[in-house]
Amino acid sequence: MIIEEHSIVTLTYEVRDGGPQGPLLERMDANYPFVFMFGVGKMLPAWERRIFGLKSGMGFTFLLTPEDAYGVPSKEHILQMPKHLFQNEREQIEPGLLEKGQFVTLTDSNGRNVNAKILDWDEETVTLDANHALAGKTLFFSGAILNVRQPTVDELVQKRYIDLGGAHRQ
Image 1: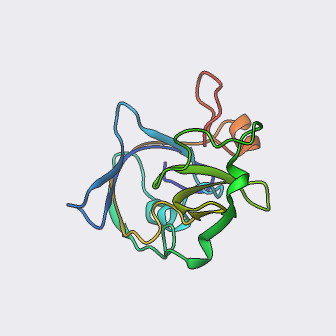
Image 2 (image 1 turned 30 degrees about the vertical axis):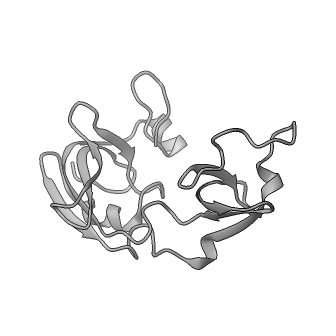
């Protein structure tokens, strides 16, 4: 069976920064493979285009430019927020929260969680970078397709992979 819309795909992969010899960013191996439903908008569209039509046993390698991956860093995603928003119910800031490089979770205007990195702060304002952590990076993927199957009825209805234990995954 080949990878097509709504296929349940099991694969291994490595993603490296910049190219095949770049620093390893993430690895999913045969002991902990990545399993997902193809074509439901959960994965990078350019990533899915690169593996569309592959079948079990096939390998893959490809580069994604920043424009095809997580975009280029944007000044629009550098945010200035009032420092008081970081206070707890006792109007205190938890120790260790305001540290350069620390990630915090914000909620955008659509109710989605967005991770942002603390860049700096002063007495009144916290400056954050809400660009994706991989924005601006060229990503090199290599891996292998382990299995491709049709979704179950429940998976198709829910538009996601459901493992044998019933737990929901992407």
